[in-house]
Image (cartoon, rainbow over all chains, first blue to last red; front, side, top):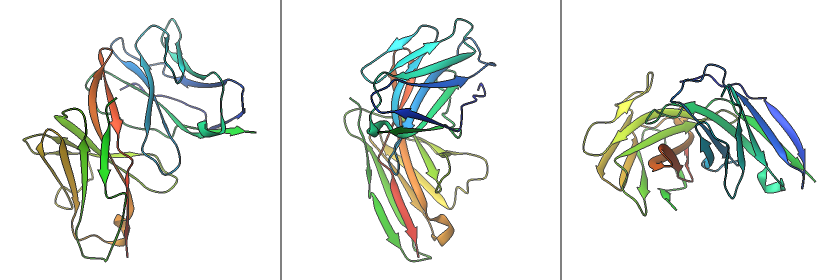
Length: 109
Length: 117
């Protein structure tokens, strides 16, 4: 599985877009990029995943660079409820999910 | 959408007793479920993969006799912490895999917080 690097923490103003980066320079051709988040004392929540193309759903957008070595999760209008730890995971299909340290996003009023 | 239910959400037990945690897929069948453990201020640690109708596979360093996993049906996996001790106090989270847009996506339960006195 490709190693991922994320900043330890980030701040974002409420109502502004939150852009969370993830570096995965050793990604292989069949590995997907997944994003999950964990709000304090809850189970992780799936956000989005992608292989090559940018993806968007009701929660967020995933922007993957053309060389696939990095990606950015975008929360278009962050709210206080988006304060959580965000995990970027890169794995091939059917592999097990191992979680790193993630990025603690603090959304501030 | 796919929902995974965990029970109990909180449990307190005395040292030396065993505790069972249930994980159910409510609206889908899950041949594979995963059990994680999380200590305070740490990330999730994968403990084992639960396979319906066969033995669970454990991650390195996880004692299979300590953490008994049973996956007797396509909608239920159980984790039993045997002879629990205070160091087993943790947040236990299960998940099930579903197929979405060509990839496997994990859906997680809300977690079970175990406190061993």
